[in-house]
Image 1: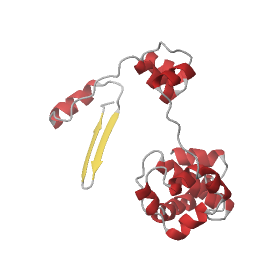
Image 2: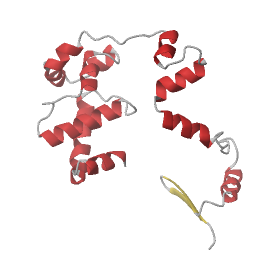
Image 3: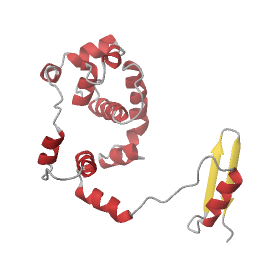
Length: 186
C-alpha cells in the first residue's frame, strides 16, 4: 500500500506491476537479501528508478552502492551478481563512498547534539532514533499500549476477548484451507 501511494504521488501508479517485476529481478541479482527494512526500501526505490528512467542501474541510490561496497557485511556484498556489482561499483558515487566510514559518536556526544547532556539514556535513545518531536509527543499522549490476549491462551479465550471489543464489526482469519469469519449482529 505504501508503494502504491508513493507511485500515485509520482503519477505512475499504473506502473506498479512493472516496478514489482523489477523488484523481483533486483532481489535475485543482489543474492536474495532479506526483505525487511532497510533492504526492502533499497530494492523498491532502485526498482522504481530503473522503471522510470528506462535504464537498469543507470542511476543507483547511495544505499545500494553502500550495500555493494559491503557496508552491511561482506557476505551480502559477495552474493551480488558480479556483472551488476561491477556496474554499481563503476559509478562515480561508488568511488566517493568507498572511503566513507560510519561515525561512532559517544553517548555524551549524542546527548549534546540533541541539546541536553543530562537527559536519561532512554530519552536519548528515543530522540536519536525517532528524531521527530511530533511523533514522540503523539506516542506519549497515546498512553500505555493496550494489552493483547496471549498466544498461549485457547482459541475460545481469543474469540471471547475479540467479542468484548465493541468497536469491531468483523474479524476474518484465513490461512491456507482454513477460514473463520465473525460478524457482529446488526
